[in-house]
Length: 116
Length: 116
Image (cartoon, rainbow over all chains, first blue to last red; front, top):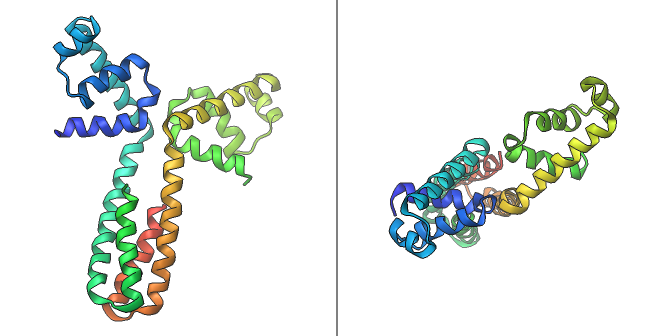
């Protein structure tokens, strides 16, 4: 998946419910179902130019929500700090045994689950 | 701080920038500066009833954003899972020494920072 799509998909995951039904529908056709502008145009009876306009406006809205709330940025920062802790936990797995190893394993797995 | 205030403050932290200037101003008078409705009324020249109306609408908006995005709920779930991992890390501090103890300490502190 190219970076732009990944980014918009994360924004959509958080802010999709703040969009209109039409914006959501076109977004999913394009980004989830990977339809082309022409295919969406045929499907909806709206001109290719019109479809492109809705998608652009939707991307603007999603980016605007992120600019104002920083939600995705905050989750990403958390993820990169979790990755650093997980590297420490991986090293702990090599250094411990018995009950300590069990705890280290639970932390190692638990950190991964946090990123769910 | 009572629970309702705590909850609204968390919602405001994420969604405050989606409100209008007036909504933000009244919200901060009431929830951050702890002014009474009468005090805000005096300060702004708006009736006590008017101030109450703005605050109610603002609370509704914040709760609506949360209902549609689940952002605060997702962060809270993360926090409670971080707390569980931190309890494991605390136990690890007692069971390890040397390099393993140093790693366990870094994980223990790092988990706390995640909740920042």
